[in-house]
Length: 231
Length: 273
Image (cartoon, helix red, strand yellow):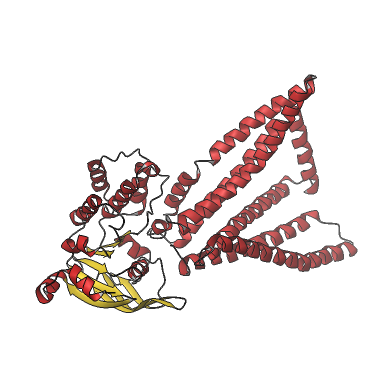
């Protein structure tokens, strides 16, 4: 069964069409890049899959079910923005995740925090922006989820942090799980992707494996992206 | 899951209010000493003025407890559901109704605690041991007279009053929640719309209350009036029960409408940045 399935998925904000009849299937065990320029509909698609938005028409299914309490148990979501409560200490945050997510692996989280020398008594508010983002990623990747939806995980961070983020994603996701990475920074993520989906103005314009792009097109994903989205 | 949500809701809101409670209670002890000092000795004018100012400050602190309580409640709802934290809260594997109920329960507890703390502070500051006993005795006598000397009727009346009071506090909380969730569904001017909808909803509730009370109050008066004319006695207990039923019913309907508005807006019109 597909981990994520969109059937004729459409989302309109007033007269603006953010997604237009999107049909998409994400299979288990793959890292898929959801690639497109700013405003192409990537975040809208991810928000719909998380139940943060309601479709105008069509359906989005997670392991066969519409977004709801059951799907939220198996989806681990990294939004574009810092969503962890900044007044909490790391211990309180760990306790929060442990209380609500049955698949949260406390030991995995503690190991990753300790590798970064982040003390559990530290308050999130007292951390630098980069450290906060790392803590948020650690929480998301410490879940043994079936689907990871990562919205712009490497946007606005320095190259060293980018490497850390990508290594954390690759090193921690369950091989049976699917990972969807939304980004427009193709070059940085290209090496970790199995599949790519190009999205523009709310429509899927290309769906392929990374290997196919390299073999058939003789190009890198980044080069193809620049060609497809040339202004 | 509701229990866990309540636990974390308390953790998030308990950082300021207990400290404020402690300050108010400490101030009440100080006011008590100040009053005794003013009564016993002839103090210089400046000192008298300072003590009076301090008592004014105490009165402000009593009001501030409620104001801070409401501010904490509104700011928590806004940040936790409609701000960046909403990306986490709204993707927790729990029902939306549980999230709303956890917030209502915790807010009601804080508001009730604020009332209790204020009451204790007033007693500490202004009542001597003998005056407390006398006042409570007088109040008890008055209430017993009202309830026809029947303790069971009095307790029943008191329970009715507490229940209606609690439902009314729930309605107050939900008025804020509904306004915030409607206002934040707009793309721009979210707080402006929230304030606007707060006044729209509370005005609508007030107008409904006035109309219902005018209509029902008239009929209640007619019923008791007819009974009186027919040779019955004025029945304060029945009138109390009818009033409680009307006020309780109104607060319940108001809460239900505000709850629905909150729920539907968070479910269908959630507009996180």
